[in-house]
Every structure is written in structure tokens, then in C-alpha cells.
Image (cartoon, rainbow, N blue to C red; front, side, top):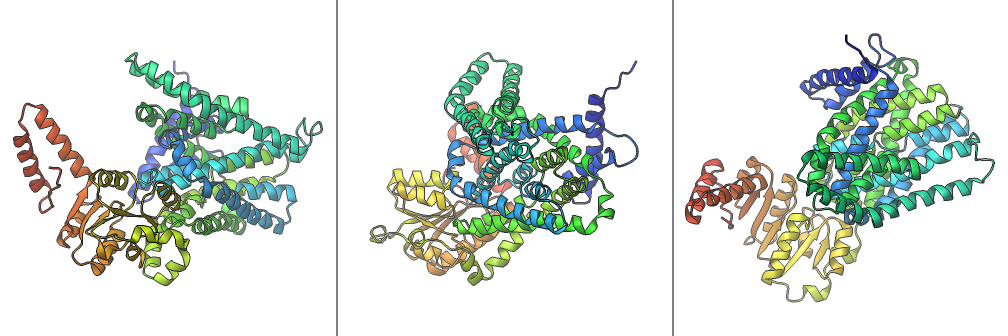
Length: 583
């Protein structure tokens, strides 16, 4: 006899419909998550047919949020988190204040009370962690400067929303303890709990968790290692929520951060990835289940105004603040597009406001429907980032007005300029550029770095590195690096258009300069070769040929034979491409 349960039903039907509608969305060249959201609407209580249990779906979706934030924490080191604190902390607070104020004023214009308006505004001011992180991963920029700034911003938003969730019952007067202690005492207790949790994770977790993973790994059991990773991710998240009052997402993030201190961090992330992807799909299905499609008919103008506040109220202040803090236009545009949507914390705030009697049913419905629309529109905003950046770069005066930087960071000190000749110019000092710089240091080769991350520029200057702040594709930046007297320019940053602009400007100043660039496309590689670039390196090619060379040597082939075979492969698979000096 078949015993159907609510848990099996929601998982099986949710995955099946998510696959069907996700596939249809992909065929229509829409993001698959649009299909997942439609699947949720289909199984929701506002449409006929099968109705899934919404409460159970939300709990399953919460597991996806936990695993996703855990994975981000594993790849997001403490150094990365501290590096963006100067923009993430004040930037996120100011952005929340602007968006929440706009939302509250809109609700007041509709005639709502201040309590309802405040909840409504707060719900429109916090971005969905799942949506933004999935988008950053799909675009391959999660580990970039833009991705680190966005993740740091999300962490600060989560901390602010934890405080808001705790304070709502107190401020509404429905909390049982509100009469026993003043508001400031509740705020202080909440902040102390959050601080205690973070301190426990940073000072105890960074030692205990890696030690535990190492002991489990020595058993040689993959099942035990997978269980240990899931137990730590879920256990710390639930424990953080129960004991310290922080959110599941924030607890899971710091669980990942402490595991990142272990040598087994990459294996831990790999073990959690399959479950992370699966439960993240259920998150989008659960969002769709909450939405009443008829809200579009009943309150079309109110819904449009709410969506406008979400997009403009979050995107505009984040864009302006990123520029104020000295970040390039590309980072500002990425941050603005990423934050122009709302998600899980908005649902929590809306639910609490409704339960406390602060938010009307109409406001709850508007928040959920606007959240769904903002998630659908968000990929289109991301697609507009590159065209907008290119449009601005074709207008150098406007770009120069936006990308302002302190004069002391865009010019080398006079002591470093003296005698600077026959040097190298390294554009970008991340993992690739930093490794090249260390090689130059060991060989005694002088070089100047051009970096668009202001925090890194300040840090490198403290370490004694000759570095300039700016975008090397912009007029005037390479002049300050004295590229006219340089022997070599190394472009270690991705981006075909910007790479071409850098090479064009460098050759205009110094026609004899040699060049080595990084590329991710065979077509771009062939184009750069035809343009006379010294060496265009494609990561996948060098990785494949390096592995092939090692495998041939390990198979009792002598070094000369292995090198000949690899050279032959290089010319056949990637004809017309310069040979790497390492081969």
C-alpha cells in the first residue's frame, strides 16, 4: 500500500515541476529560476489543482539557504571579509536606510500607519542571498573583487535584519518581555549575542572545526566526511539561531568561514554542493507558492510602485556609495544590479509584521508579489551591466567624473619614479597577477602594478609595492605607470574589451612594448595573436597541456618525448597560438 506523505509529495512534485518549467524557461532563453518560480505558483494555494504544504516547503528551502551560505563561507576567507569591511559596513547600512525610507514614505502616501510603513520599508531594503549568490556563481565572479564586495554587503544586511527581527515584537509592544525591560536593553542584548557568536566562531571555531575535519578525514571514510560537513553546517546554523538569535544563513556562513581555515575546505565544499543545488531549487519553488497572481489585477499600480522602490531604492544608493568609496564603475554596476531584488529576509519580516498586526494583508501580498517580479527582472539587470559599462567608457569625461580617486593613489611617489625604466607593468594583482609579481621579486625585475581595488592598493603600498589605483583601460592611468619607458605589460585581468583598450593605449605610448595577456576564449586568443600580442594565455589550454605533459612523463616517457607530443598538440588543437615559455 502506498502511503503518501506531505514531505515526499512536496519533494517529488516540487522537483518534477521545477525541472519541467525550468527546462521551458531555458529553451525560451530565460534563467531557469524563472521556471522554478512558476512551478511554485502552480502548486501554490492560489491556483487550482495540487496544493503543496507551504510550511514544509519553506523549511526545505531554508536548508538550501543554509547550504548555500555555508558554501560561500568556505570560499570566503577572513582576509577577504575584512578587506571589504570599509565599504560593506557603512555602505549596507546607508543603502538599507535609503531603501527603507522610500518604502515607508510610499506606504504613508497610501495612508498606512507608521508601524506598517516601517515594516514595509524594511522588507523592501534587503536583497535575497540565494538569488545574488547564484547569479554571481553563474557569471563566474563570486571570487572576484565584485563578488567579495557583494558577499560582504550581504553579511552586513543579514546582521541588520537579525536586529530588526528581534526588535519588531519589542517595538510593537507584543513581546512579553517588552514591559520588563526598555528597548535599549533589548538592542544591547541582541548585539552582545551576535558578538558572542562571531567571537566564538573566530577564536574557537577556527581551531576546533579544522581539527575535527582532519580527524574524520584520517578514517578514510567518504561517508563519514560528508556527514561531518553536513552536521557542522546544519548544526552550527541551528545552534546559532537557537542560542544566539542570529539567522540560519548567517550561522551557516560563519560555519563555512571557519572551515575555510582547514586544508580540507575545498573537499568540504564539494561534498555539500549537490545538496546545495537541489535545495536551492526548492527555495525558488517555495517563493512562488507564496504569491497570489491576482494581486496584479487587484493592485497593479501599487505593485508597480513597490517594484520600482525595490529596484531604484536599492540599486541607486549602492551604485553611488561604491563610487564614493573609490571602486570602479564595473563594481558599482555589479553591486547595484545584484541588490535590486528582495527575498528570504523580506518574507520573514513580512510574516512577522502580519502576525503582529503591524502589516495589513494587502502589504504582505504586495511584498511577496514584488519579490517574485524583482527576482525575474534581476537577470535582465545583470545583462545590462556590461553594455552600460561600455557605454560609459565611450564617454571618458563622464567616466572620469564618476570614477574619482585620491591623487595620492593614482600617482607613484616621486622616490619610486626616479630611475624607473625597462620595467614591467602588471594590470591586476589577484591570484594571477600576484603570482607573477612574486616571480618578478625573486628575479629582481622592477615592476609597477595597476589595480582597481582601492583596499588592495592601500595594502600593497603598505607592503612597499609600487602600485597605482585605477582602470588601465582608461586614459591617463598607464601614463602614470610610465608605460612609455616599460619593456613589458602583463594583463592579468579577464575582460576582452578592456584588454584590447589597454593594449591599444600601451602601444600608442610605447610601440615597442612586449605584452602577455590572459584570455578565456579561443576566438579572442586568435584575435590577440593576429594583433601581434606577445603571448595570449588561455587557462584551460595551459591546464590541459600541463596535465598531459605530467601524465606522459609518468607513463615512462622521457621529458623530450613528452614535450614534443605536447607541442604537437598545441599546434593541432590551438593552431597559430604562441608557445608558452614553460613548455
